[in-house]
Image (cartoon, rainbow, N blue to C red; front, side, top):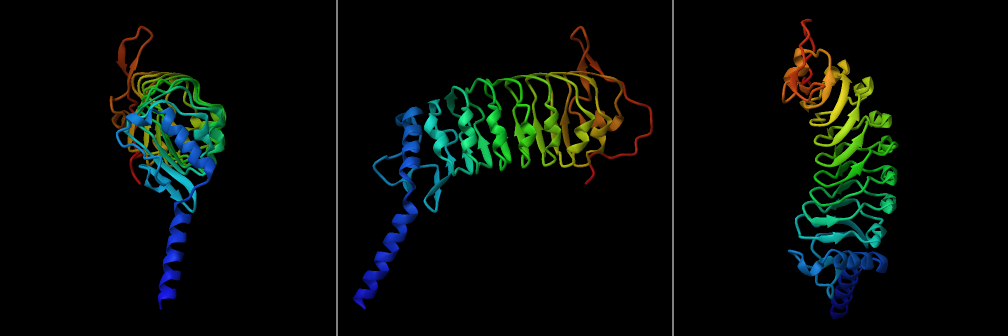
Length: 285
């Protein structure tokens, strides 16, 4: 009987060790992240002498680091290049820290990534085009940073994307045509940037869209009538742009500021409402 108990304990111990182990490369990447972001000043620190499984915010499955959840933990500095060696990551949440620098083009290494949230930091530079290779990405949150430049032209390759939150940055330029190919989008938040251009009639492709915010940019031209046919659209704010032309009563009511735009002199004006009878309820399911 004693031998059976000894064998059982040995098996349990070996299983624990296996479950607790990640590759040397991934462990090294985590250690480099810790030092690069001033780990000694984190709110919840890692004891590097202990197993990775004890490190706050790290999720490992089958010997692979799949999750990193260090929101509001006083991370400071830049993400090291080794961060992008964590190729098995599925979810990353580093929001509300003090991260600086740019996102690396090697972000394309994170092929399994579904959630990437580095919002409310001090990140700058442009959004790397290589991010468009993350085919499994569902939630991209970069809001409240200092990111500039234009959206990647091939952003439409993110065919699984459901939430794109880029508000409160310094983004410029038009919406890439490929963006309208992402039929899975539910939330599109681009407000408080410096974007321009027009809205395409292809906005009709956003059949699952629930929340649209383009507030406080420089968009112009006519507002596509197709917006009214997005029957899941429950929240919308496209005011404080330079859109022109009449809009339906339904769309005006759906907009948080009733379609208040800026004229050529920078003065706020309300877009006129069409007098045609409205029969479409844009918020119905």
